[in-house]
Image (cartoon, rainbow, N blue to C red; front, side):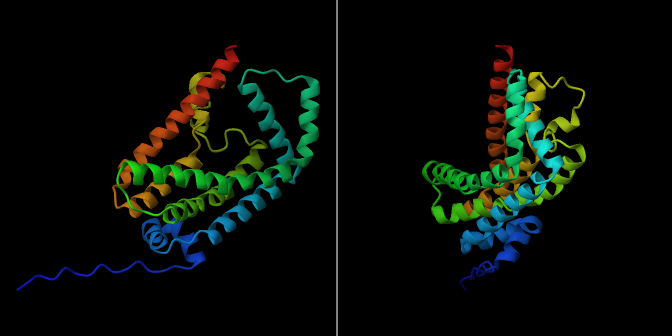
Length: 242
């Protein structure tokens, strides 16, 4: 007799709320559903509204404006630049518009989603022989961004308590004894735990879509992230020493 191969059940089609919650609590099953039914508009719009709303609310407070100003000054100083009184006054005036600047900056999210999806499609389809569509890859990346406003819920109260945006979720929180002007401190400061979480989730989604091992994809993404952090630290160190 011929042995019959059991049929593989098709992934369940999930609604918007179920997909948003699923990315956090059951990512593998959720990404399987997203790959089978690649919808992206609702989740990307929801993430953009939540992220921009959270940033606007935080920056509308006096603490938020001060935190924005502190982050802007630290960013300049990280490149070895000394702020003049006139430059500081200019930034202080700009902090009034921090809520709008922060909220509008979320428009970058769709652009970065497109770029990330295009890169992943090129690597896995053109180089590794995958056959996923751009819509599928884009939907996977779009759903991985759900973690950003979730992480914001944790990061913004910490930033409010500390009255600064600097070092809230990067690896420097574990190495406060390092000189902040050292290369090591700059490298660790460029590695954000929010993006580490996002990379893990994205790796799961890509692995499900292309039927590959999550670990190898995650390690590759982390390697790219480490290179980017290294370059950022090197540039800041070079400018500081100039």
